[in-house]
Image (cartoon, rainbow, N blue to C red):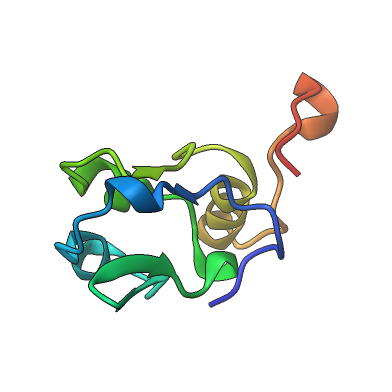
Length: 96
């Protein structure tokens, strides 16, 4: 499943990556791949910003602003059966 193009907050600090592949194991949407013994972001737009990768990276190589923004809005829309809504107009946040 693709989310909104180019909005994910996911960042990888390549120099901190040890190639343990934990991110590949825990990511529910195959965002990561291992290439040349290091992780890489293979599909940024598949990231739903759940935070599993960053929480499981013992080396601090990953950052994601989990549970906010468009991914949260899309998941909320799926749960309620409605359109993605994050309250941008109400809270003046920059999520969508």
